[in-house]
Length: 54
Length: 162
Image 1 (cartoon, rainbow over the protein chains, first blue to last red):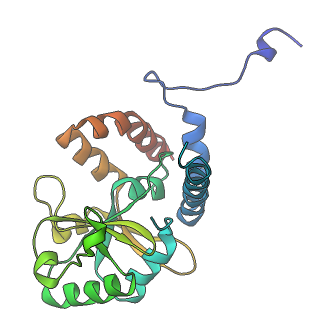
Image 2 (image 1 turned 180 degrees about the vertical axis):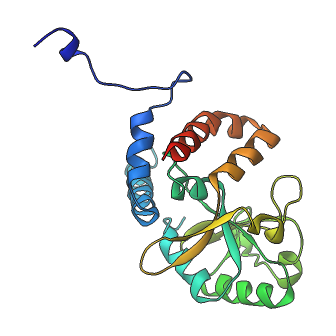
Image 3 (image 1 turned 135 degrees about the horizontal axis):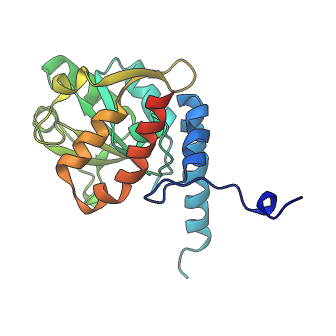
C-alpha cells in the first residue's frame, strides 16, 4: 500500500462543495430524497426537544 | 410547535386538487441538492376556484399565521388571492403559501419551469426546476440565498453532466 492509497478520497469543488455528497443525493429518487430530509429534520427537532430549557 | 411532515402536507394538497408548485429549500432537495429546510414553500394559482380548494386543505391542516399563534389568525380567500406571502403553521409543520416569488413571478409564470415528481405513495407534485431556483437566488442575492448558492450551482452542474 502506498502513501497515496492512504490519502482520504475526497472530492470538493473549487468553492468547497462536497461533490460526492451531491452525487449520492442525485442517485436517490425524489421520494427517497424527501424521506432522507424528513429523517434529518426529525432528528434535529428531537435533539432540540431534548435540550429545551438548557 | 408541530413537527414537520412534508409528505402528509403534500398529500393533502395533492388530494385536495390544489394547483401549486413546490419552491424554496424543499424544491432544492427534491432536485437533489444536499441542503436542509424545515418548512414547505409553495406558490399557488390564485384564481377563485383554486383558492377555495386551497382554503379547504388549509382548514383541514388547521393552518394559522405563525407570527402570532396565540391569536389563531386563519388565512381567508382575500389573503390567498393576493400576491403576498403567508407564513403559516399547520399540523404538518411550517407552510409558506406564496402568491408570488422573486420579482413578482406567479404560479402561471413558474409553470414552464416546473417538473412533476413523485414524492412517495403516488403523491405527484410540481416542483420548481433547479435551474430556475438558482436563477431566482442569483437575482435576489440575499444573504441566505448567497450562502446556499454554491451547493445549488454544483448540484445543477452535476445534474447536467448526467
